[in-house]
Image (tube, rainbow, N blue to C red; front, side):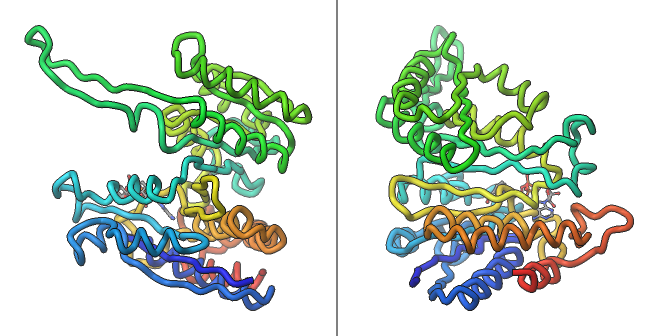
Length: 356
Ligand code: NAD
């Protein structure tokens, strides 16, 4: 199969971890006879330094005309104090919006061998923890009207949370489809006892549910969901929620899995084109030392193959290779414990490649 992939390495550890993922893409293309055409483009701080903005329209156009985008991470102290309109994060919001990526999929998986790195109790992590959080990405309070003004001589700020039926319906359908491909369980998180947007959310989910009788469905209020993720994470299969709730719950859940360096994500829309990136940032504290964990980015490549290219076999091959490096005891410094085999970022990439 021929596929065009745009590569946005970004800043900090971005180039190091993405280089290891490129090795994986090359290995998969050789083994399964695909032709992956890779093009590197500037994004984030690197683009600010060169073009004066974090994401140029030309890069957006190139990404739109590709089959998938792989991103490392962006940002760092060098760009912390620049004009807020050209900060690196502006580039992230812009690319998600331009590519119409309204669903963010974050797998939460704790490998047995890494259970000691999880902050949860042994009796909880001894059970299999493997679920995904699907977060709505382009609506809700982050994108609603914002205003700060003086009312009755008091400075007053307003953020508006808005959702329409169509926005909820499209993310709901993605969540049910993902559940159908997994263990057919879906938890929808809202605050329907208080918020009108949540009432519409719940009503819409219940309408979609009628068409997916195989899926075991539950509604959970967001405050309860925050507790249940810690109390019984092993019970969840797929969880879907709106933008801000998803932002908070997915970060809470990610800590269960031990290291932020292990965790991939996918942002997708109605088309096959998706954006794939690890959940962590550019880790300026360890950049340039070849010690970053590349697994989150490599597993993001597996998600790219599965969601954008329908290459389940190839995706499984990468995930199995990662399982094997972990069970064989290879660890980058962030997940290293006494008795493990310590490896660098590039060594980790090489061993995963060998196991593919
Ligand atoms: P961070 O995720 O970059 O780092 C947090 C901690 O985790 C650091 O100690 C770091 O060394 C460690 N870490 C992160 N990824 C790792 C990996 N792959 N292997 C080993 N250790 C890893 O978060 P931060 O320090 O708050 O942010 C640094 C910069 O990244 C900031 O400029 C922030 O704005 C940016 N950021 C970017 C994204 C993105 O590109 N999507 C996301 C979050 C933060």
